Amino acid sequence: MPEQLLGDITKFLPEITLTVMFLVAICADLMFRKSPQIVAGITLTGLILSGAFVLNQSGMNESIFGNMIAVDPFAVFFKVIILMSAIFVIVFSLSSVELQTASRRLGEYYSLLGGLALGMMLMAGASNLLMMYLAIELSSVSSYILAGFTKEAPDSSEASLKYVIYGGLSSGLMLYGISIIYGLTGSLDIYEINHVLAQGSVSGSALAIAGILTLVGFGYKISAVPFHFWTPDVYEGSPITITAFLSVASKAGGFAVMIRFFKGVFIDPSATHLPEGMWASLSGFEWYHVVAAISVVTMTLGNLVALWQDNMKRLLAYSSIAHAGYMLMGVVVLSNEGLAAILVYFMVYLFMNLGAFYIVMVIANKTGSEDVEDYKGIGKRAPFLGVALTVFLISLTGLPPTAGFIGKLYLFAALLNSGWIWLAIVGALNSVISLYYYAKVLRNMYLRSEASEKKTEMIDIPRVQVATVLVLLVPVIALGLYFTPLVEMAQASVKMFGSP
Picture 1 (cartoon, rainbow, N blue to C red):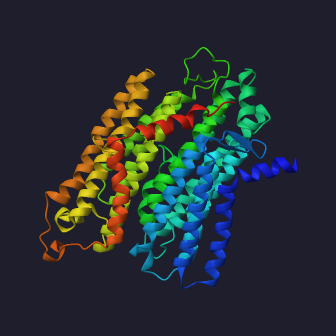
Picture 2: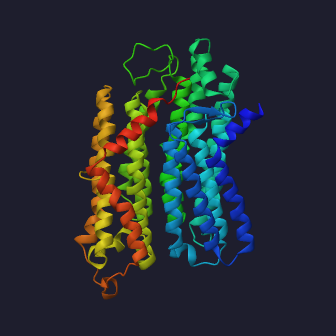
């Protein structure tokens, strides 16, 4: 037993590293109150070291701590996305005027970022319903505090309060659903639950209710309709850095835990007649039809409401909701191809969405505004930022030759290969709608000019910020032209995933 525990601990090193980093960062903040850069450096070092341990887990496919946490390529892929997002956000934060202007404890901010990343890392590997719930709660508590960090802003406290209320409601409903599943099956281990459900002795109606209630918790984390109401206000009221982190890493953790739950609990182990890479759902709860409906409503509402947004953060918030709808399409496919498409999409989404938010932050640093109308003439005043934002928005639309096109291409290919033609058509139509509100930003940058002389001055961008934009911009273009390694990595990550 001690040998097994020691072996499990060695496979838990990424999370242990973040835990130690979190505690050290808190202590450092107490000792170096006037030097938050020290805490930022400690957090950044912890994230990089944790990333090294995660990469060392490539190829593992094991469960640790009594099947509480899975260490497999699927979890590794999402952990990489979460850690990369956290590292980028810390770099963003160091140059954020929004965070530097008021006198506040930035050391707490950086340590909480590490705690938030830890919760999302646990979500990526959780294979027990209790661990799933605890991981979601850990990330949520950190998110609530960080969302209201700029409390002197008029909409910051409102954002944090709404986040807490919606988060508490969704967590309660999820916990109720988990309790029903435990009552029906007598287990919290997703694979043991699967074995019980496969025997066909569980009430289908009770299982459907429990599944839908549990889906509420996942839907809240990924901003899926109708669990999205917190997203626009929280994204607008939070610091831009936290908005960017929630839009990518929070979704990554939410999708990871949701996919593991549905595939671990509802896969039919007796469906051996299917082609390799395909899997069938247990009868009694056709959950993928529910997810398909949520996908359609999510992408449609996200895109339609984004058409009327004048604030860049709210526009990108509704865009983020729509992208959650696109990625949900890969969940309903019931195949490894669909899951691999989600992983490919997430990796390109990381670069293009963080890039868009970072440029919004840089422009807000210079102009003091996030309003779309204040982007008039930005293409002339800051040519590099204008071109970079154009590429990011084109990629978010899904047009070639950007990486966003590759992400949507593999999603639509998985849908068509599995017979979900109507869902692919809905997704394509929504992509056309999204082009309109992205084009509205481009029109202001290049086709409309500001009459005020003060607003026609050239915007000078520090070299560090230019380099940061390039680090995000190059992969968006490169992965649009050469994407084979990313696709192969995504396919390898789902090949051995989810075997009960």
